[in-house]
Length: 380
Length: 137
Image 1 (tube, chains in turn purple, cyan):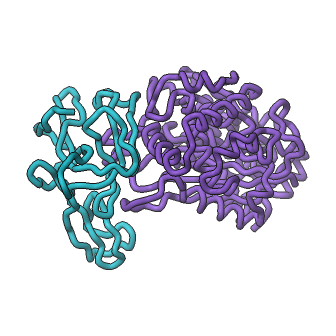
Image 2 (tube, chains in turn purple, cyan):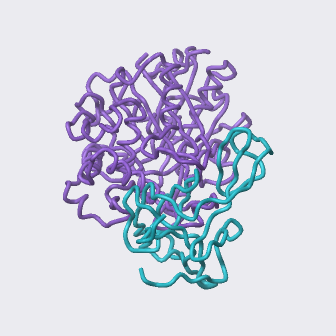
């Protein structure tokens, strides 16, 4: 496999932007990427655009506005992992030697659906019974608290940490810290989860430039190397499963760690899929950042703080940035790129050299999640 | 809840429900090649793709794995409503709980028929669970 680099990143800030379609949001991110890297469209060999609700041919509708037309271009749907799956496909193309330069982006507009919980469009028997995403995570939370002796206050500490981190992120949907009291008094959504345990549905877009070593040298912009890139689907079965152990995250992370020849102890920072506060506890354990059933203690001890043992979601995570579904995985890689190139400003994790990004999602019955993506990036 | 179970015209998952007096059981599939168990039933095993499957029926009772009160959700389910994952005869099933409170993990439950929501066409029912009361089992 050939080495693959990230040579540029751009985010159109997340938030409520109902009037901007996914295609318009994606265009703004890709336009900024082109301007900041100086890449010309004829140098781009192929493009991938991730979105869950953006509609047919989103990648063409975005990329043709910046001169990337005629090349092979693909729109990628993999629920919350759509954007990271687009990056993974770009990585595959460069690693295989079939491309030297790729634009991968994610874009989503969720405001068009109105308020409430994320629309589930996959029509299965659990949705017919009233399942909503907060309900699924609420039951995982109830069981985690039951099995490991954690409390709702432990869940709240995840929200407080990530909102504190996000207060410094100009690209975040919420740029305001919250207190434990704010979390505990927020509106109940699905017991034990309250509003401030849940990420907001947001609109936004993010884009990265992926390239080979030759193109990286030519561009001269700061680069980071993708050491591991893995995507996995959920293991489908309808028998008993341990819902406090997201097997899909553990399997995807293992594949990425093996590829990178790195492990959890090597990581300086992780951008994790904290769609709900409980998700950080479940997934940090499955990523190997804490022992089984102990992540809530690590959060409480400050081990996941920006200046802690391993910074978890120093950008604020989904709880602050918001969750424009298809854009989330790409924006995590953008945040990691800025961290590893020393451009993260107030978010900077001092001396960051190794980062992991993790997205997982898709509420279909019979699996932990439909799709999960993990990337490991290092300074070059 | 003391409301007696009612059966309405529309029953979600009706073809999988087997009447057992005041309780119900569910149609499940067992794969004779790889021993996995499935709900809803299927004609090919979703683990090993074998067509050698036998169609059986679950118990009419199980144990709650986890539960929540959904307070923000689709209007047709009339939030707040209670959901639980219930382990029964080797399968885990998501069902409404007939009641106002989330079930503690490990709570024994019975499977029954009950209303779970209403839309423009009226009320609809499905399999629901209630905490097992009194009786011996």
